[in-house]
Amino acid sequence: MERPAAGELDSSTCEHLSREEEEARELAPSPVGSLTDMPFAAVDIQGDCGGPDVPQGNPKRSKENRGDKDDHVKKRKKAKKDYQPNYFLSIPITNKKITAGIKVLQNSILQQDKRLTKAMVGDGSFHITLLVMQLLNEDEVNIGTDALLALKPFVEEILEGKHLTLPFQGIDTFQGQVGFVKLADGDHVGALLEIAETAKRTFQEKGILAGESRTFKPHLTFMKLSKAPMLRKKGVRKIEPGLYEQFIDYRFGEELLYQIDLCSMLKKKQSNGYYHCESSIVLGKKPVGTQDLINEALHRERMELKSKVKQIKELLLKPETQAKIRKELFEGRVCNNGNPTSNADFNMILP
Image (tube, rainbow, N blue to C red; front, top):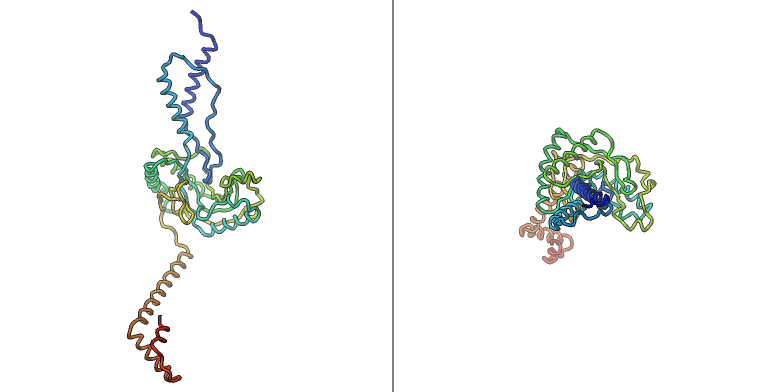
């Protein structure tokens, strides 16, 4: 009886080991894909690199069993490749001082290089991303909504009844591709990181594919070259530091964490430029600023004035009021020049 050649034995062994390794890789956590429209993902995920071809195993093995195993591996590989985040948790930036400062920064950059116009983040879209995730259908969106509601008491426990102030100062980039306003150092950073980690755990416990492999770095994106792919053909390969050097240490202002939104990356944005929001949690009450009090007072005064104008108009339209006015106008005209005022003249005076 002939012994099998060494090469054949090695091939069979290699095939067995290769398949076990491939299945182990497929079961491992998958990194998050490229987020063209999101702040903190700049690297596209490449497909698994195939190893060298492996000779076929025992030709007598059942084709049906082999097909089942191959289909299983293909499905896992497809799921891994299709794992692209399409939803995220957002902390909206609503402080007008911060948004105004960013607009000044953007305009300053565009004055130096107008080609970067389409790379700028639009009004109303400024935010901090806490977590990215994949929600494939309406049922998963509902699960995401439940997870966000479940997150609220954990966040409130972290905050201990206090407001979390997020100060923004200075500019930086991710490898010259994403420009962002930095979150200043301080105790608030640790609290925000704890909230982000708690959010990741809460959503994953609900069975949602969430998070990414890289370390979470909170920031406020104001421009991104990936928003304008044609820039590379125009010679723009990175955001030059000279474009924002005047704002390196600029203090943009402070944002109070009072709301976390579950937003869609793909659905049409709202009329104010902010992302489509599936649900939100409010953390305590939003502090009322001086400008809010002024606006409320002006609104009350306008409403009172409108009410008085309406009353005056209704009074003028009453027959007895018009008769009295006609009489006074008629007597006044007679005294002045002896020419009586006609009803037609009066109707021209009173609409």
